[in-house]
View (cartoon, rainbow, N blue to C red):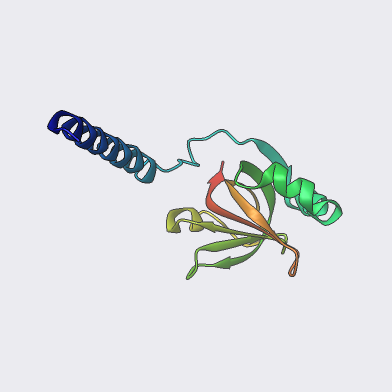
Length: 134
């Protein structure tokens, strides 16, 4: 190989490597979702959503997984140490400490957050990044 060909080949490899590093950097450090700012894709009650998962878990998982949803139900448990709210004994949702202070036992609340999934063993719905809507 002559020097000119080696130089072009080396330059090409360096450019490909730099391009790959830039693309990976943008992919790995992209901004996170702001669930609070997103519009809810679905609005439903805890009992209705739970029934959908019991009747057709595969279809419901495809429809609701990783979606921002608004859901309402009665607060049946509050765990201030783990920042979890339980609605109708079927939905376990995590929220910030500020949001936890808004919830009261037995109160009807509407949560907006990211739906994680359905636990078939315990028949529980799971959500995170929840906020209590007024």
